[in-house]
Length: 490
Image: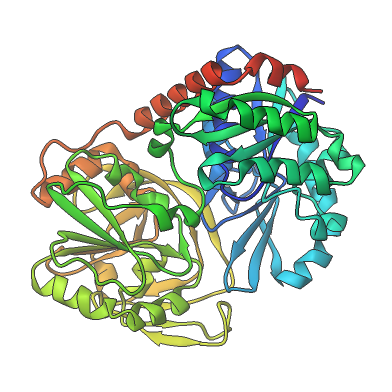
């Protein structure tokens, strides 16, 4: 097995994903063959990892591990995130194991299921380590959730089984970091506490010397060494976001030539489809929370993917966004629907088998003459395609249920593997597609923006992500004792 270290957090959203990506890139720059691993993830932002020999196309992993694989300079693997939970309701989620649909479970049922999933986690753990010098593991949530410890596969349950040393991450930006680190030390059982080799503080703003007494206090309470204090990493904002919790903190920023409005669906999925547009200097992307109207000055409305199309469609109407969207169209505005958003743009969405829930059909937004029927078989694959309206190459992935038909599909938005995909309205201003990553194609994005009156678009988005990863790694080398962290690995 490769040597390994693990980052666990004092809570959720403390920045583990970016720290692991940055450490992966730092290790790669040192010439190490490094791989990421996250035993269990919960996110509706999924990526597709190819599975050799799988005729179906591929399997699902969290987009965090997809990003971390890029940081390592390797292709993503389903074994980098063997258990992925995709929330469908407030109490239940779809369970993906080693890339494939395993079942659905309510929160209480999943706790009982986790014992069976540890075997899959350890199997994937062995596969990820093959041929690697170092594996950097990301925990989920917090090891301080001792009420869940007996069946844990994400934090100390995994660390103790795999004998992986842990660095604890505390987030000073949210306040109470001394208590969160010291409190974690206090309540952990001895078997778990001795796995922790030290801690680091993340998201510090200002003069770090002002926290010297805080570090002394943590050392007094815990005896743990500090591996460093990481400032707020500005480059992290240029990396794809993993979790929808970040949407609650997104501001619209300064006004720019084109405003893109994105309704924040309750089960929004793969919203990092918007990241390439956000990176364009003349584009302002505004995520619109429930209860707020879609801005009247938006030139483009993008309806993103959804893990629960019918449920989000009903909420869309409750928020009055259907009226806002109709007014936007009457003003000559453009609309793009991606995956679930594409399905919502039609006349009707039907779910005769109740795959998404108890509501089996809902009237669509009526901007495309199409109809969608949900079917049990899920399409999961990476794709190369071609834009029909612009005759330019596209590259992305599909993760969806449902079959869409209707007159507007005779005007496809793209051709994928020789098969028409999506639909376009007669005036060309409403576009729907099942392909995620549409805006990641620089040439297409530039031409699409030009059609909306924005010239000079089409930056090299992938190069921007690579530069951001390099900058994060450089910052970590400056503010962390990376030598000591990597030396922990065993």
